[in-house]
Length: 451
Image (cartoon, rainbow, N blue to C red):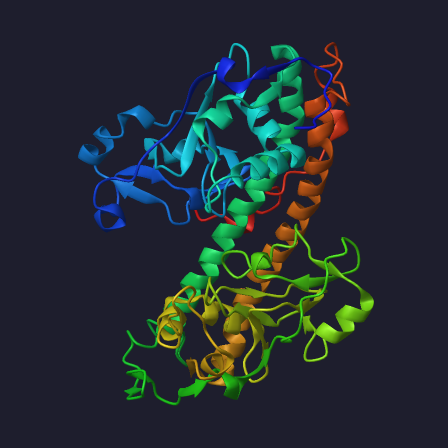
């Protein structure tokens, strides 16, 4: 790997007390539990962050058979197989006790020689990520990093004092990003909880301000079961404009230009992640927006592979949509009701009925999207829901934009600090507060407290 550095490089195996991966308990996911000891899998590992989405659990008997891969606080976790290979983070201590499966490696540094945050920071630099990916893609058909490859990674090693000072610059960035993500998760949970109470449990405020169902509200039969009197069942094409992507040869990514959204830009919980952009020429952009240029309030839904993943376009943004996704523009219904409905368990069930199972990938065609059924309340209920939930989505969008800027800052600093191109004066331990003095994202957010 070409990585210029001021410091001597050493092999990772000489700086660690443990490097190793786990296994899946006998019986596979069918034997996972609803609670117990955490089993960390590749979907829980992203660069710089740990996510609880899809976290599995095993019981003590299963865990005892994986005692060789007990996860400890500050362990560095590295994905070693599959599409998410090379993603790396430090374990969230709140997930412990935990084990890892065979797709995740534990890297436990000898803290007398290598700090975990410094190791994670090195492994997530752009150059190291590219190097690991090139290694993983050699040989077999499935991308994989072996234990031997990881042990032989060469890492620059400044003395512990300088490692500590470097980490004190990088840690606040990780912390601020994490705080924003935690706030966003809570805001999204609040919006979905309100959606469920109003449009699944039917406990929206009645004319008297009381929960509709509990206070004896009237219901009537529909093709989706009992619904409040006066509500309607409609298909998506009756309340939105559904527009397919352009079926043309994919334009070249130029590295500069305008954004053509890709499936990877559809993040979890209805949001876009545009930290990685596919940029095309002005001419190509005009072609790929000839059917629709998605704008704020519009939603996009994936058609192939990760079927039914949805995201909403944030305020002030416009994009072209790439292949394998469809645009949904709200017309009769407000935008927040649309995205919360698309994210709901109710819609997930409805989508599953329209998915075509293929030999390689499942798919959801445009006609199927148009025929997705929704329960539509009267305008006064829709407008009240929008007034309560739109501010939540708006705050999420602001936090996402702030995190994008923080990530740009971190990505710019990371290789320079890790390589020694930027040196932290050892006698100025508080220098990091001068280099980056960003306000905490959580400050002034007391109104979102759940206590």
